[in-house]
Image (cartoon, rainbow, N blue to C red; front, side, top):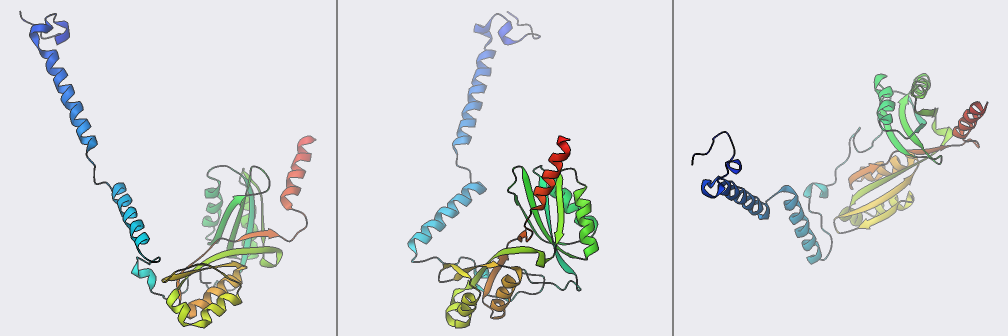
Length: 271
């Protein structure tokens, strides 16, 4: 019996003698078996290599007496140059202004705010973003070196953004400032030079961790104290790493300006 070539094997009506359905089934079973075999093979992927490396490092740390530094480049102390490791730059007599901005919590707003600085060629020294005490309102603390006219212009341009509630600029005398820094010091140099520990105690810094390779020190305070602490230790050549957080600040005024703004807006809404 001849099978019509225009129809499938299941439609020819003679599956018992055609054999095409059985061939397709065998091909499907072979393909499924190959997929299962490939999935069962343990591939040498990046994630598995990373997991094996972490497991080996943990086992090595457990066998050793104490923690050891595995990267030799972090075991050599070097002095930081200007514009590196948080050193102050010469800003040609410009004043450091702190901009405190309140806005609603919407995605993409940070990009709009930083674009205002970019268009006017003003460099942002530090940036801190957090939620404020008012529900749904975020607080931006931005520092930059500029003149008073430029700082006021930046505030006006930022306030034009739809989701921004308020923007104000302050000098250091008008606000309370706080920063946090972490210093990684060479432990052999700390033990060999008693002046290093005296500087740490003089600035009321806190030792977070000590091991045979490095000592981690935390310093919290105003910007000048944080930088003076770093510069003194850096002159002794014991600093391996240094990092400091962005500035957080509150105003010295007894009345919060954001609360005044929200109260005024509610009065206008009720009228």
